[in-house]
Amino acid sequence: MSDFLHWDEDICLDEILGDYTDYDNLCPDSDEDFVQSVAPTTIKGTSIYVCPVCKKKLRTISGFRGHTTKQHNIHSLKASDHRQSTDANPHSVPSSQTPSFLQDDVFPSIFHRALHSSVSIIVDDPIYMNTDFRYLTERATSREVEQILRAVMHKLFLQVGLSVSSALERETLFQHFHRMRCDKSTMTEIQEAIASESTLTNRTVNNFLQILLMELIGQILSECYQQEVKQATDVKESMSQNDRQILYYMAGYIVRSLRKNTNRTIRRHNRVVNVCLMV
Image 1: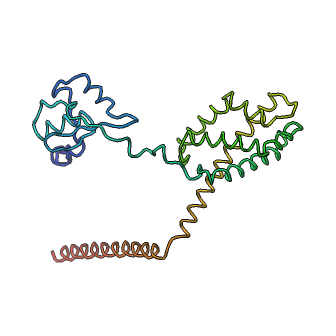
Image 2: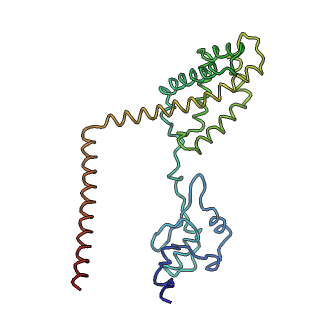
Image 3: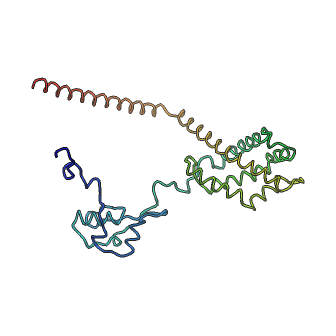
């Protein structure tokens, strides 16, 4: 039977279970505690429970009750009496932090390149190009229309307030983008600017705008990516000689440390082999 696992000897249950305990059987508490145990955290912030004996901070009611019962043998504490609020999630990005490509001195140039790239794609596509669309592509790159489109897209990115570096952030951006495309007042403003002094129907202008906006959002994201790559390259190239020396020192230290540990392991192994041979 020695091959079977002995729970008491081979596994530390305290390490696996942590501070969990079946709190329902320990001490009845108020409905408020039960609700907080189901959802102790919110988007705006979170709550912690502080042990009054050792001041340990626990994230859940079950952990608080398990800790006070198991570690201090106290069964009469109410978790709600020792609850404290904390700040918002530290892993979330503050909305006040604006990505670098949305800065007023950067975004206009990004948008200008993206707009002209989008118009070029439409012009080069034989499916789209006809007499009406040819006129609209010329109007789309005019200063008046570019300013309106830039303001709309800049507002869109600012509303999202994300770096769009992850799939989730891009999905949030596109949710707002499609909502903007369906906004009647926004689309009417752009239509009136782009189709001024023309006899084109609203349907034709709207079809062109939808195609242009879909190309435009992709080109803006592409330009933003290239902008971030350029900034990262500039930072890398501007690394000072002192920074390089620090990196070289750290790299050399790591190699030397690994070499020492390897030699120590080899010597220990050789000692064990020699002892076995002597026996």
